[in-house]
Image 1 (cartoon, rainbow, N blue to C red):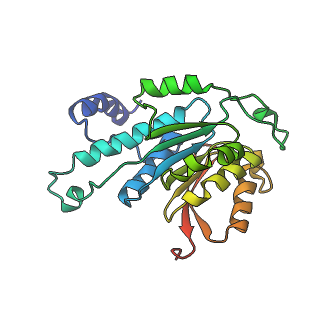
Image 2 (cartoon, rainbow, N blue to C red):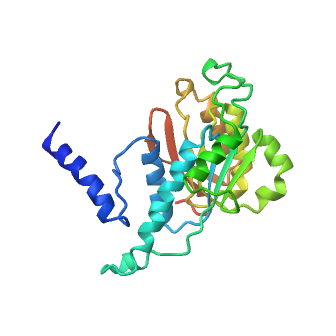
Length: 253
Protein backbone atom coordinates (compact mmCIF):
# COMPACT_ATOMS: atom_id res chain seq x y z
CA UNK A 1 0.00 0.00 0.00
CA UNK A 2 1.40 3.39 -0.99
CA UNK A 3 1.95 6.22 1.49
CA UNK A 4 -0.57 8.33 -0.45
CA UNK A 5 -3.33 5.75 0.02
CA UNK A 6 -2.47 5.32 3.71
CA UNK A 7 -2.69 9.08 4.29
CA UNK A 8 -5.99 9.25 2.43
CA UNK A 9 -7.48 6.42 4.48
CA UNK A 10 -6.34 8.13 7.67
CA UNK A 11 -7.68 11.59 6.73
CA UNK A 12 -11.03 10.62 5.17
CA UNK A 13 -12.91 9.98 8.46
CA UNK A 14 -11.38 13.11 9.99
CA UNK A 15 -12.48 15.16 6.98
CA UNK A 16 -16.04 13.85 7.24
CA UNK A 17 -16.11 14.68 10.95
CA UNK A 18 -14.67 18.18 10.73
CA UNK A 19 -16.16 19.21 7.38
CA UNK A 20 -19.66 17.73 7.26
CA UNK A 21 -20.81 20.25 4.65
CA UNK A 22 -18.08 19.35 2.19
CA UNK A 23 -18.87 16.74 -0.43
CA UNK A 24 -16.10 14.15 -0.15
CA UNK A 25 -16.33 12.01 -3.24
CA UNK A 26 -13.90 10.66 -5.81
CA UNK A 27 -15.12 12.20 -9.06
CA UNK A 28 -13.16 9.65 -11.04
CA UNK A 29 -15.24 6.74 -9.77
CA UNK A 30 -16.76 4.79 -12.63
CA UNK A 31 -19.28 2.70 -10.70
CA UNK A 32 -22.99 3.42 -10.25
CA UNK A 33 -22.54 5.78 -7.27
CA UNK A 34 -19.92 7.65 -9.30
CA UNK A 35 -22.34 7.90 -12.21
CA UNK A 36 -25.10 9.24 -9.97
CA UNK A 37 -22.69 11.75 -8.45
CA UNK A 38 -21.79 13.07 -11.91
CA UNK A 39 -25.42 13.12 -12.99
CA UNK A 40 -26.49 15.15 -9.96
CA UNK A 41 -23.49 17.44 -10.45
CA UNK A 42 -24.79 18.21 -13.95
CA UNK A 43 -28.30 18.88 -12.62
CA UNK A 44 -27.19 21.06 -9.71
CA UNK A 45 -24.60 23.09 -11.63
CA UNK A 46 -27.06 23.76 -14.46
CA UNK A 47 -29.97 24.47 -12.10
CA UNK A 48 -32.21 21.94 -13.78
CA UNK A 49 -35.38 21.39 -11.82
CA UNK A 50 -37.34 18.17 -11.79
CA UNK A 51 -37.46 14.68 -10.38
CA UNK A 52 -35.34 11.55 -10.30
CA UNK A 53 -37.08 8.67 -12.10
CA UNK A 54 -35.78 5.13 -11.69
CA UNK A 55 -37.29 2.24 -13.64
CA UNK A 56 -36.40 -1.20 -12.33
CA UNK A 57 -35.16 -0.53 -8.80
CA UNK A 58 -34.87 -4.16 -7.59
CA UNK A 59 -33.92 -3.80 -3.89
CA UNK A 60 -33.73 0.01 -4.05
CA UNK A 61 -29.98 0.29 -3.49
CA UNK A 62 -29.29 2.77 -6.31
CA UNK A 63 -32.55 4.63 -5.54
CA UNK A 64 -31.37 5.22 -1.99
CA UNK A 65 -27.84 6.03 -3.15
CA UNK A 66 -29.18 8.69 -5.51
CA UNK A 67 -31.17 10.22 -2.66
CA UNK A 68 -28.10 10.25 -0.40
CA UNK A 69 -25.92 11.91 -3.03
CA UNK A 70 -28.61 14.50 -3.70
CA UNK A 71 -28.86 15.28 0.02
CA UNK A 72 -25.08 15.73 0.13
CA UNK A 73 -25.38 18.31 -2.64
CA UNK A 74 -28.21 20.06 -0.77
CA UNK A 75 -26.04 20.23 2.34
CA UNK A 76 -23.18 21.62 0.29
CA UNK A 77 -25.39 24.27 -1.32
CA UNK A 78 -26.62 25.34 2.10
CA UNK A 79 -23.02 25.81 3.22
CA UNK A 80 -22.05 28.21 0.43
CA UNK A 81 -23.96 31.33 1.53
CA UNK A 82 -20.90 32.83 3.25
CA UNK A 83 -18.27 31.73 0.76
CA UNK A 84 -15.79 34.45 -0.30
CA UNK A 85 -16.38 33.37 -3.90
CA UNK A 86 -19.41 35.07 -5.47
CA UNK A 87 -20.40 32.13 -7.70
CA UNK A 88 -20.57 29.86 -4.67
CA UNK A 89 -22.84 32.29 -2.81
CA UNK A 90 -25.18 32.35 -5.79
CA UNK A 91 -25.37 28.60 -6.29
CA UNK A 92 -28.11 28.10 -3.72
CA UNK A 93 -31.42 27.99 -5.55
CA UNK A 94 -34.86 26.57 -5.03
CA UNK A 95 -34.08 22.86 -4.94
CA UNK A 96 -37.01 20.53 -4.50
CA UNK A 97 -36.25 17.43 -6.52
CA UNK A 98 -38.60 14.50 -5.98
CA UNK A 99 -37.82 10.79 -6.28
CA UNK A 100 -39.99 8.28 -8.17
CA UNK A 101 -39.46 4.51 -8.24
CA UNK A 102 -41.10 2.13 -10.73
CA UNK A 103 -40.94 -1.65 -10.46
CA UNK A 104 -43.10 -4.76 -10.53
CA UNK A 105 -41.74 -5.65 -7.08
CA UNK A 106 -42.41 -9.22 -8.19
CA UNK A 107 -39.17 -9.85 -10.05
CA UNK A 108 -38.50 -9.77 -13.77
CA UNK A 109 -41.44 -10.17 -16.16
CA UNK A 110 -41.44 -12.52 -19.15
CA UNK A 111 -38.82 -11.49 -21.68
CA UNK A 112 -38.67 -11.89 -25.43
CA UNK A 113 -34.87 -12.07 -25.30
CA UNK A 114 -35.06 -15.51 -23.64
CA UNK A 115 -32.09 -14.54 -21.50
CA UNK A 116 -31.72 -16.81 -18.47
CA UNK A 117 -29.98 -14.08 -16.47
CA UNK A 118 -33.22 -12.09 -16.60
CA UNK A 119 -35.61 -15.02 -16.23
CA UNK A 120 -39.10 -14.34 -14.93
CA UNK A 121 -39.13 -13.79 -11.17
CA UNK A 122 -35.42 -13.02 -10.77
CA UNK A 123 -34.28 -9.79 -9.07
CA UNK A 124 -37.20 -9.91 -6.66
CA UNK A 125 -37.65 -7.56 -3.73
CA UNK A 126 -41.07 -6.74 -2.36
CA UNK A 127 -42.38 -3.20 -2.17
CA UNK A 128 -42.56 -3.44 1.62
CA UNK A 129 -38.89 -4.48 1.85
CA UNK A 130 -37.79 -1.59 -0.35
CA UNK A 131 -39.89 0.97 1.53
CA UNK A 132 -38.52 -0.24 4.87
CA UNK A 133 -34.92 0.04 3.66
CA UNK A 134 -35.71 3.53 2.38
CA UNK A 135 -37.22 4.67 5.68
CA UNK A 136 -34.09 3.53 7.47
CA UNK A 137 -32.16 5.96 5.24
CA UNK A 138 -34.57 8.83 5.78
CA UNK A 139 -36.61 8.33 2.61
CA UNK A 140 -40.12 8.85 3.94
CA UNK A 141 -42.85 8.06 1.46
CA UNK A 142 -44.90 11.11 0.47
CA UNK A 143 -44.99 13.73 -2.24
CA UNK A 144 -41.20 13.82 -2.52
CA UNK A 145 -40.67 10.03 -2.49
CA UNK A 146 -43.12 7.84 -4.36
CA UNK A 147 -43.26 4.19 -5.41
CA UNK A 148 -45.27 2.80 -8.34
CA UNK A 149 -45.91 -0.94 -8.50
CA UNK A 150 -46.64 -2.90 -11.67
CA UNK A 151 -45.69 -3.48 -15.29
CA UNK A 152 -44.69 -0.09 -16.69
CA UNK A 153 -47.32 -0.07 -19.44
CA UNK A 154 -50.00 -0.83 -16.82
CA UNK A 155 -48.75 1.93 -14.52
CA UNK A 156 -48.93 4.40 -17.40
CA UNK A 157 -52.48 3.28 -18.22
CA UNK A 158 -54.01 3.02 -14.76
CA UNK A 159 -52.06 5.78 -12.99
CA UNK A 160 -52.15 8.33 -15.80
CA UNK A 161 -53.49 11.18 -13.65
CA UNK A 162 -50.87 10.57 -10.95
CA UNK A 163 -48.05 10.38 -13.51
CA UNK A 164 -49.26 13.55 -15.20
CA UNK A 165 -48.66 15.72 -12.13
CA UNK A 166 -45.16 14.40 -11.37
CA UNK A 167 -42.22 16.73 -11.83
CA UNK A 168 -40.35 17.05 -15.14
CA UNK A 169 -37.45 14.62 -15.40
CA UNK A 170 -34.05 15.80 -14.19
CA UNK A 171 -32.53 12.29 -14.17
CA UNK A 172 -34.01 9.13 -15.68
CA UNK A 173 -32.32 5.91 -14.62
CA UNK A 174 -33.51 2.95 -16.72
CA UNK A 175 -32.27 -0.25 -15.13
CA UNK A 176 -34.78 -2.78 -16.42
CA UNK A 177 -32.55 -4.79 -18.76
CA UNK A 178 -35.20 -5.88 -21.26
CA UNK A 179 -36.33 -4.31 -24.52
CA UNK A 180 -40.05 -4.26 -23.72
CA UNK A 181 -39.57 -2.84 -20.23
CA UNK A 182 -37.10 -0.18 -21.39
CA UNK A 183 -39.38 0.77 -24.27
CA UNK A 184 -42.37 1.16 -21.95
CA UNK A 185 -40.28 3.21 -19.51
CA UNK A 186 -39.15 5.60 -22.23
CA UNK A 187 -42.69 5.99 -23.49
CA UNK A 188 -43.98 6.74 -19.98
CA UNK A 189 -41.33 9.34 -19.23
CA UNK A 190 -41.44 10.98 -22.68
CA UNK A 191 -43.69 13.91 -21.63
CA UNK A 192 -41.33 14.61 -18.73
CA UNK A 193 -38.10 14.92 -20.73
CA UNK A 194 -36.58 18.39 -20.95
CA UNK A 195 -33.44 20.01 -22.26
CA UNK A 196 -30.53 18.70 -20.20
CA UNK A 197 -32.26 15.65 -18.69
CA UNK A 198 -29.72 12.96 -17.86
CA UNK A 199 -30.75 9.58 -19.26
CA UNK A 200 -28.92 6.66 -17.65
CA UNK A 201 -29.20 3.30 -19.41
CA UNK A 202 -27.79 0.90 -16.85
CA UNK A 203 -27.81 -2.18 -19.10
CA UNK A 204 -26.74 -0.51 -22.33
CA UNK A 205 -24.07 -3.10 -23.13
CA UNK A 206 -25.98 -6.22 -22.15
CA UNK A 207 -26.68 -8.81 -24.86
CA UNK A 208 -23.13 -8.29 -26.17
CA UNK A 209 -24.08 -4.68 -27.00
CA UNK A 210 -26.41 -5.93 -29.75
CA UNK A 211 -28.26 -2.90 -31.17
CA UNK A 212 -31.31 -5.03 -31.84
CA UNK A 213 -31.80 -6.16 -28.25
CA UNK A 214 -32.46 -4.73 -24.82
CA UNK A 215 -32.04 -1.08 -23.97
CA UNK A 216 -30.11 -0.28 -27.16
CA UNK A 217 -33.03 -1.35 -29.32
CA UNK A 218 -35.51 0.48 -27.08
CA UNK A 219 -33.68 3.81 -27.28
CA UNK A 220 -33.01 3.48 -31.00
CA UNK A 221 -36.69 2.92 -31.75
CA UNK A 222 -37.76 5.66 -29.33
CA UNK A 223 -35.59 8.23 -31.11
CA UNK A 224 -36.78 7.06 -34.53
CA UNK A 225 -40.40 7.59 -33.48
CA UNK A 226 -39.87 10.80 -31.51
CA UNK A 227 -37.85 13.11 -33.71
CA UNK A 228 -38.17 16.01 -31.28
CA UNK A 229 -35.50 14.38 -29.10
CA UNK A 230 -31.79 13.77 -29.55
CA UNK A 231 -29.32 12.24 -27.10
CA UNK A 232 -25.65 13.03 -26.68
CA UNK A 233 -23.27 10.51 -25.16
CA UNK A 234 -22.17 11.78 -21.73
CA UNK A 235 -20.12 9.02 -20.06
CA UNK A 236 -19.97 5.23 -19.67
CA UNK A 237 -20.09 3.70 -16.23
CA UNK A 238 -19.74 0.36 -14.49
CA UNK A 239 -19.57 -2.68 -16.80
CA UNK A 240 -22.67 -2.06 -18.89
CA UNK A 241 -23.98 1.46 -18.23
CA UNK A 242 -24.09 4.54 -20.46
CA UNK A 243 -25.30 8.03 -19.59
CA UNK A 244 -26.70 10.49 -22.13
CA UNK A 245 -27.77 14.13 -22.15
CA UNK A 246 -31.20 14.68 -23.69
CA UNK A 247 -31.61 17.52 -26.17
CA UNK A 248 -34.83 18.96 -27.48
CA UNK A 249 -34.46 19.59 -31.21
CA UNK A 250 -35.26 23.30 -30.80
CA UNK A 251 -32.49 23.55 -28.17
CA UNK A 252 -29.92 21.22 -29.74
CA UNK A 253 -26.80 22.82 -31.14
